[in-house]
Image (cartoon, rainbow, N blue to C red; front, side, top):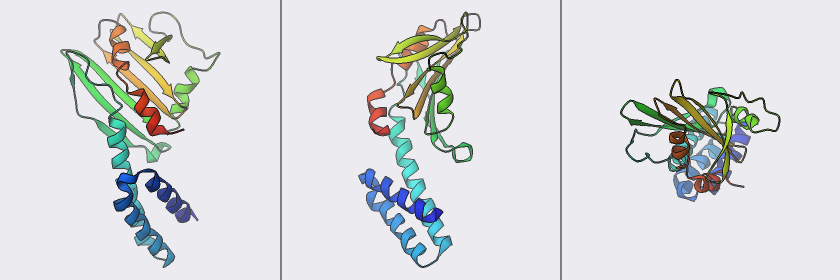
Length: 198
């Protein structure tokens, strides 16, 4: 039954991603054929190949929503990781440097840890105040939470999008919290919402 569910899920994803329809659709059809003949090993092999192709395409698409390097900063290559062993989904990250200062932007999609970020935005959430505590800000018209420790010159800003994605920018050796706000303003939220769907 799990194979049947996996086949159905893969088929839906392939339909939703026309650019992959030929390559991925062929793999899914191969899996269907193998499954209908009771060939579990080839079914699994074809499903894994289809999953890999879909994941590669998703990573490419989601990487375009990461903030560009702020003026005067250099961006590292995008890194990604599937999170199958810790609840599913994927994470995509990119680092930025300017002298001794660092920023790290990360996008977490469809993982249970997103709920932890969402809980911070709920009414009555116990957010520590004072130096280093969370405070509410707005980024590109969206509610966000920011904390910054001036003494340590470090902080982070987080957003939650459509209950499925958590966005974070962490900074170290930065002068002010405005660096975090400006960096977070570079997220392509419109594209992210489009990728997440309704």
